[in-house]
Image (cartoon, rainbow, N blue to C red; front, side):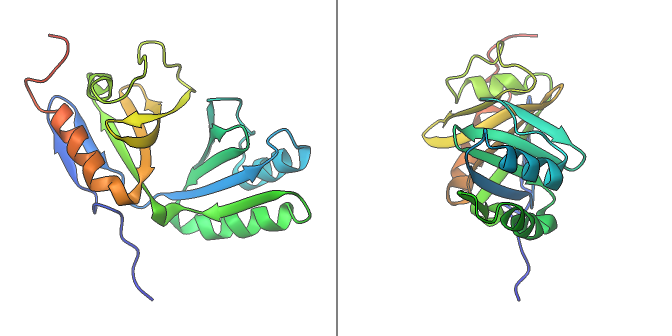
Length: 186
């Protein structure tokens, strides 16, 4: 059996903000009727989180649950726990119209941190970061690729994209974080 490696082996860049690939992150996509009491109970039992509302995310302990679409949530947590999470959800949702898949190795996760982290993302994504609420998830474009992002801390944003475009994503984030490219002085 081979050893798991993240898309960019934790690559990072520090400019007027810090951009880093977050390493191995567990991600399980769950599709189904998000209003179903059975699905809600399964998510809560597995993660401690309620199913979030539209464009929201919730956290409990090691797990976060992010709304992705009207019939999809993304469960984000420890990499090693993702396969067991799929098994737990499949058992809990047996007989329901639902699908849980471990997508950990198909995704890359980045963190953009620092007082000007939003400026890095403003250059790349058509999102009003001043209006982005603390528990809001946005599925958007990062330059030319699909991504989801949320404010994961006071001066931190988390971003998920397909692993196949991780190098491109890091490159545009790094370029946007280069000193001298700040949008606002100060």
